Amino acid sequence: MAGASTERALGKGDLTRRRILDAAAAEIARHGPAGAGLGAIAEAAGLRTGSLYFHFPSKQHLISAVLEEGIRASLQRLDAAMAAPQRATPAERLRAGITAHLRALAELSDYAVVVLAPQFAALHREVPGFRALRREYLRRWAELVAAAQDDGTLPAGPDPAEVRDLLLGALNAAGLAGQPPARTAEVVAALLRLPS
Image 1 (cartoon, helix red, strand yellow):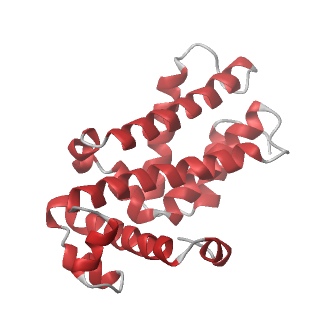
Image 2 (tube, one colour):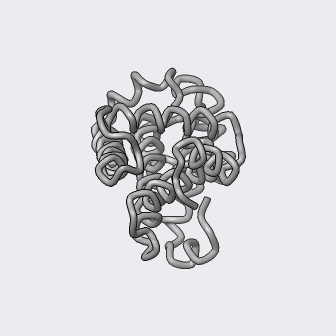
């Protein structure tokens, strides 16, 4: 998940934490929170099981960190897409948001499963930091939709939050099914009649 430049900016402890989170996301995505084993997570991260406790005091803290990292990384990708100077019009911003969301699903696939799969919904309610980050992500998407409705890019009338939920639901379904992000973004943009 992290690139070479990111790795240079992180210290050894941060890199170890990243390996643990990535390994935990993969383990939780495959086996669920109850079935995820700390031994398997430690082995995948190249550590001894006891070393996990240096970074996370409990399995629940580790699971919470995975949830928060998944949504935080998606939010960072959305923010980066919105910060690009060529994203001036609401249509361009919406197209950029669609692409960023689909790329996050592909690049963060294990995290995406943990964040989005319905069987983890009860777990989501137990992690206040995740809930706050998720609310922020959804708020920003509602703003994107509302701006696109205000300028006529999208039809006015439907509640922006409902349009956002339908749009994200379609993107999530395509992304979790493994559809190529660039192709899916083009299809969605064509359906929404977004200018190129």
